[in-house]
Structures are given as C-alpha cells and as structure tokens.
Amino acid sequence: MTSTLAPRKRTTVVRAGDRIFSGLSTGAGVLILVVLAGVAAFLTLEGIPGILASPDEVKSGQSFWPYVWPLVYGTLIAATVALIIATPVAVGVALFISHYSPRRLGQVLGYLVDLLAAVPSVVYGLWGIQFLAPHMAPVYAWLAEHAGFIPFFAGPASATGRTIMTACIVLAVMILPIMTAICREIFLQTPRLHEEAALALGATRWEMARLAIFPYARSGIVSAAMLGLGRALGETLAVAMVLSVSAGTVTANLISSSNPSTIAANIALKFGEASGKTVNVLIASGLVLFVITFLVNFAARSIVDRRKDFSGAN
Image (cartoon, rainbow, N blue to C red; front, side):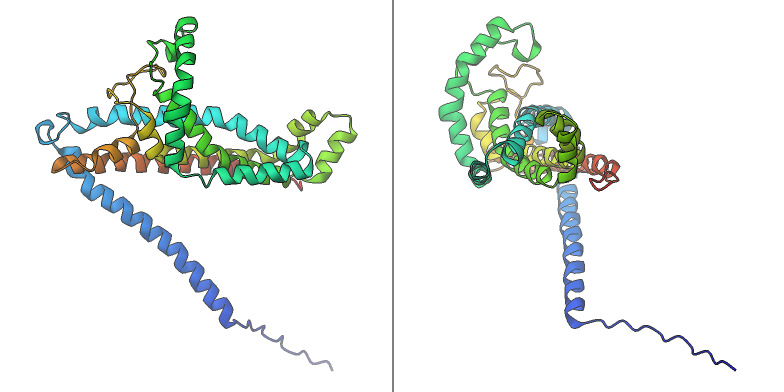
C-alpha cells in the first residue's frame, strides 16, 4: 500500500531590499506620470484663455491660430532640416568609430563626441552668430544666384547670414552628439557572428555594414533620430540668438532675412515683456509645442515597436 504525500507549497521569501527597490521603482514611474500630467494641466488651464482671446486683447493684434501657425511651421522646418543634416553624419561617425577606426583613435573620437553634448546652448548660439553666419552669407548668395529655381534657395539671400538655414545647421551640430552616441552603442552590439559570416561570404566592409549592422540597428537609429528631433524641437537659446528679427511669415525660402521663428525662441524672446492675455497666448503656444513633441515621441515609439521582434540572435 502506497501513500502519496501532498506537495509542499512553495513559499516566496520577499526580502526587505526587494520591497524597497520595488517601491522606489513604482514611485519613480508614478512621479513621472504625475509631473507630466501636472505640466499638461498647467499648460491647458493657462493656455485656453490665450486660445480664446480676441485680437484686441493681445499685443500681436492677431487671434491665436494665425499667430501660432508661422511659429509651428518654423519649429517643424528647423527641426526637420536639422535632422536631415545630422542623421547621415551621425550614422557615418558612429560607424567609423565602432568599425573602421583604430581602437585608440575610436576611443578619442568617442570622448570628443560625448564632450560636444556638454557644450552649453549659448556657446553654440555665439558660434552661430560670430563664425557660422558670416561665413555662410557668401554661400547663400551663391545658392540664390545658381540654385534660385529651387524654392528653398529662392533668395534674396541674407547679407548677414542669420537665417533659418543657419539655425538649422546649429541645431544639427547640437543634436549630433546624442545621435552619434546612441548609434555607436547600437552598432557595437551587433552580433559578431553576423559580421564574420558576411565577411566570410565575400562581402566588403560596406556590404557587411549594410547587410548585418544596419538591419540590426534600424530601431536604434530611429530612436536616436527621434531623440535628436525632440532636442531640436525644444531648443530655445541658440535659435533665438542666431535668427534675426523674424517677419512671422510662412515661406519655404531658407536663406532670406524673412525668417519664421520657432515656438521656443518666440517664448524666450517675448515672455519677459508680456502681460495680460499675451502671457496666456505664449503659454498656449507652449501647449502646442508640448503636443507636437508628444506626437513625435509617440510616433517614434510605434515605429520602434514594429521592429522590436527583430533580434540579432534570430
């Protein structure tokens, strides 16, 4: 006669350290949501009076949407052009550091790229005004003369060089370090077996990068680009310093003196002297920038999630 013993119940011992860590992690996550909700609530409550304000109540003499539309356009065009300039440069520099350069040279270049992220915005703004703008003025004149049939370079070219195109180049330099650092780390995580297999099959180093590294790092490159885009959308001081007095117009011309300003630069320049409903209008424009940034990050997350099933171990 056999007797069956009842299976013992497994007891999980929860240690005090695990409880503390779990509580801190949960609290940090909740705190992020609370701060985000608080910012959104403040911008909404303070911005609605500005959205509903009549033109004679604000300093600009315009209702909200005609006033903010050129700023939205300037913000998007500046960030987009900066991203177009910075993305191939960041990918190329990251690929050179991770796979082409000698190890010591790659380490030095990596440190230099990381140091660029620590440079304050005001320094980039001064560099854009004192060095980049004067040197870009002859280039803009040449573009207006020889490539004026393209709407972006229609002219007349600015004599000072302080145009939206100069601001885009400054923004591209500012977002380059973070994009390069992320792409570099992603490239270094590419499975070594994939790279060696491609080279063993006769692929050149560029074909190996195109067939083994870039597919593995595609979602990381998208994430780096979206982080850079978010930085470019919210940059304030450098853009405000580089741009000359803007006319508040919507134009595709990037090299003329009639520049559309950005939302962040406009708030920085006008908030100090604003009063009454004009303050609410500026806060409402900040709400528009908040929504744009949220939508950009949401789109980036959806793109990354589509490709998260790809793994270098597959």
